[in-house]
Image 1 (cartoon, rainbow, N blue to C red):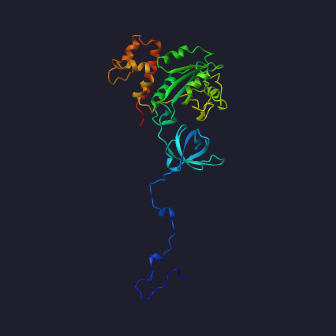
Image 2: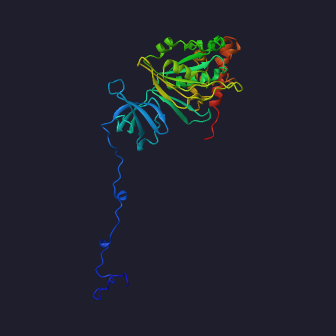
Image 3: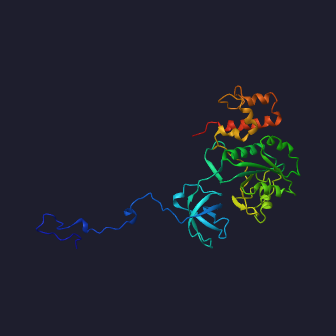
Length: 351
């Protein structure tokens, strides 16, 4: 039996009165749907604070400071897939924002950030890693001993703080193991708040006063006692702590996530971050590096325009001051740290 339609002898066309409109078409909703760049207004969205991020899920605090305050687990909207959402972000959330077990909201907008603390993988990498948004203060925790203090890492933290527009605070722990005077001396000229802390008797009242009413990010080299200090400031925080390797002298990474913790008085937050052994500044403009060395910046005002402040820079006021012994040993060490940072960031990159 043939599948062809019968032939009409009176018509020159072998298909008779065949009409293309008679062909049955398979519907394709996606192909027929009109394209649009308009997105829903989400007028019913509620504002939340991202308190922690874990594998594509965002724990957000809704109605903060009210009787209906609650934590809502959220995911990000499809249109935000290329937008970094980090701890400290203020966001708009839709969907199930009840906070009930099994509920899941959806983040549809990220509010404009007041500050943004960033770092790169290393100094040659211009790709920034966002750490925390909307922080007011950076609490740099460093040990006087065990592990050995790293002054240049402290300098990097200070540069990152000034670049982000946040206020630095330095806490020196384990002062019962070594006198921190030598470590503190170069920092004193910066006007940075410095707090010393013995392992057995941390000055919690003073620290809580400095943290009151602010969102503070705690950073530090692995093993310096940062998470121990956070646990003391926020009882019940339960941040993992570790010990220093007796062979390598390095701390072991214990805190694996960045999390916001509310201070006991309810007015202020401390954000604990994982311990790091390096802190790249590849995203920072070399012209802004000097802001992290306020003591040297005053002397650098006497430098000629375009001065790089490197050892071979002609008529550099900083180099001349060090050679004349005007800045002392501490100033010479800080200039060496500044020059190392500048030389690394000014190195041509492979892109």
